[in-house]
Amino acid sequence: MIASISKDFEFSASHRLGGLPEGHQCARTHGHNYVVRVTIRGTVVEPGFVMDYGDLAPVKAWIDLTLDHQHLNEVIDVNPTAEHLAMFIAVRVGEIVLVPGRENINELSVSVSETPKTWATVVLP
Image 1: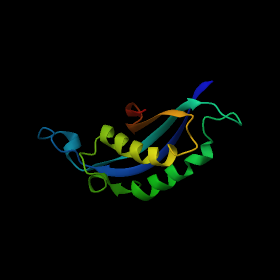
Image 2 (image 1 turned 90 degrees about the horizontal axis):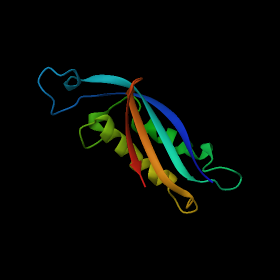
Image 3 (image 1 turned 135 degrees about the vertical axis):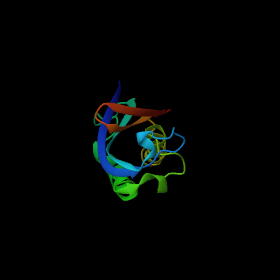
Image 4 (image 1 turned 60 degrees about the vertical axis):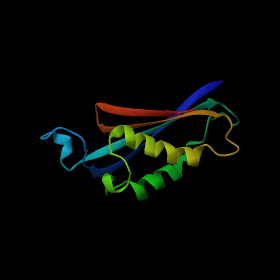
């Protein structure tokens, strides 16, 4: 059986986006209360999990240490849009999740929300 699991994480941070027209609201330094949704898709294995939610604890610890209450322009090397942030997070989550012994996992996606109505998603096979 193929299934997916998701877990949400939250953090607060500031950023400023470059390359925008003069006067654009996102060109100014501002902050968001971000939500990060990690979704893992794969084959269900004993005891009936795609992956134990508890195995995502290192993701929470990394988000808290690396992103929470930071200025994202100083954390990632590209314009800190939601799309770039999703990719940045997905790469790190992949290092945590896609390890030997978890060959049942065939897809990882990371979605980032800056506001309750907006989401950017990156999918890694």
